[in-house]
Length: 533
Image (tube, rainbow, N blue to C red; front, side, top):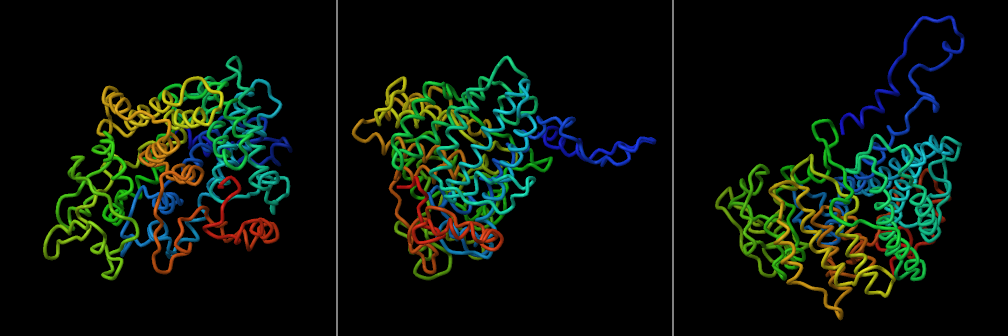
């Protein structure tokens, strides 16, 4: 990762100093490469990194969606009060910064991908890099739209051409355009042409892998529309399935972080700070779900810290991972001593420690050491997700190869096996995964609930909080009970979008106001984006 991501800086920043009498050379900026000499491959890992960075750590999702979707819970008092944004839907001092980060980082990723597209446009030898540039734009812009709704699209990324105040396109028109562009880009991938040379995904430029990624992304975007536009959803889901989506966990798309060289996993960074390792716990909703089916992932992802405040704040030590002792923290409680103090929570187990070393939240389960690794992978899209989406597509009567039950079984096994990307401590053997899937088959009468609850759990355990939240919005599963904490910003409802960055209202005022006017109730946390029916 280090070599890939710093190469761009070295190339653009290199000074080529020499004596010359050539006037053209004297008037050429030696710190800049021309389009003719610049290798567009150098932009790919930067686009990929900015994308995964846009949906990790304090750039938003761990503070918002992780707790809106009740993957995590937090008492969010004292040093970790910034988690009040998510667990209780209450503003913290930096909320406006947090809510803008997915927008800013997402557009940064799309901008690098757009520049890569422009540099390779019309170049038959670079058709693969050009197609991948479009695929990465689709990935980034769809995530922005899922989070905020309508967005600058047709006029976005045009600042070099002088468009700095872009209009907002509707999410409906954007999504249909993204699907169309994605279809064209995936079809253009050609194994006989030059392969990308600087790929931060594990594909290493393999066009067959990228084609699978493109069709799997198409499936995910198509399934977003099952309620808003069933016809388009069916059309593109079937195209994706026919084209060839992921077929094993070896196809998973992710980026390995490289903390030693400045590219740390934002989720790992958050969960390995003192306040977070103490106050961020698995939610009761998640732990109860995993316990209900004896999910083998439970003992890999959750631990009860040793007794006392010191042990609970120790980020280097592990705790008790025995599945039977795991206990999820109910969402919406604090450590403030009032009516919402955690000691008032139903089933409160009591604190641990004594005297100055006592803690009220000591028996609630926190994430294990595997999640405190700042060089852990950041997941984009997985085989497990794809199989679960195919299971839903089959349940809805779409034309896909295989039955809903088969795809569901594959999704369960894949979700368990994929956890091994976090290292040996997270690895579960294939026999255990298969036995679990066989013991928990899909029941036709309950299929949509089963499929989407498993999708929520799998994406949540892979730290893909934004995806877990978006699929919950789309499907309605799992059934979540909102928190109605004093002073919340959502009227006691689970937030369904992030407001636009405050800079949009001040710098792109007219276009922002038009977009905000299209939202029922205006630019707030509970207005629904177009596909969220």
